[in-house]
Image (cartoon, rainbow over all chains, first blue to last red; front, side):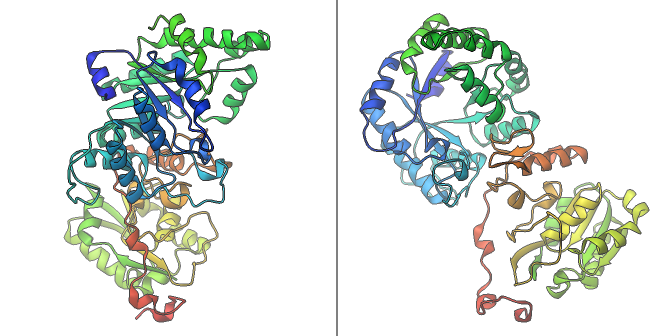
Length: 291
Length: 223
């Protein structure tokens, strides 16, 4: 199933996200995503998220597919040159993956192998264009493929970036290159998101608002200081700080559901990033009047 | 020495678009030695531009475009001519183009591609650097190089890690694409950020075999 089909049906699309383990034991990951079954339309599998070396996104996508989930293969430009990127995209198709999300990727120095060589042979726009080319039966240099893969291609954008204009120019390039939908960086400031949406409506691409579950006031403050283009409003931080540790998940569910309710009429879907709190996803969706 | 070669004149003229008043700057250092700058280059550029119906508002030869003081003094004599120009065409390595770009509030277009460094890095004491990528695109990036200024060497705009104008790897380091964006905005050339730029051709960074024969690829090995 390609996400494109859901958007075309006019469905409000819900996706979540899982990071493969650092190692080869999968049980914990399976337990984590079990509550998502039947609740979300697809699950993103991250690609060496935060530049930390982990089990690969692609085999995990394949395994999720076998277990009845619809995976979205996140692929970054950080670790592979153009041969490896194209090859992995072809492999993904053969393994049953139908959705890819093309990302630049965090820089190596931010992760656990800062000594490694940054690749970035392609940038995200060029990668999207390359995947689009593969679906049309040609590799990057124009060689014909024996059978072409079919994908729904997604891309990312940060609605909180300041200034926003260069982000939007790049978003246009991504759309031009072949991106069919956009997933955003986490949104907490609904007004800011609304202003962003009014500027990108003309691109006619479905946008899924991203939401990272806020687990504590400390986490919110950390994100404000360290994550590009993320601003958690003060009143939300105060709300989180006002409850005891045991009540934090409940509060987090309440806040997340409230944000989703207030932005769901502005966009075409939501991408949840529960960061291990997958068990609260059903509560969030219920409180947000979704499914 | 930064070894360069002339871009095809067709490409240079096309990059100028409808901008007709062109100021030419040529480097008398490495570019002269490579026959991509110097006085001969200056004369060639003037002729080509005039043949294409362009107006040459001024033409200046600077011994070393990587010498900050020299460039400042020489360019300072042409303020009026520069004010009456639409852009500056620079015959030099990528450093020279960026140096001129940093000195004037005008778009700067490269006439040359920088291929590799022949043992001498030039004498520029500023932040402008050239990676000798072999396909100089400074003309559409506001005279600021995305290859040397963006940590990820991205060609199609900033990544999501750009934060308050700084790079995700170092809060002290400017985001190269934010510098490019700000400059293009100031020059009224934001349209230069549009249009997908193709992936780089890394083959261009390989020095030609005849120049690779010595370990230095130095000045004395050029012809």
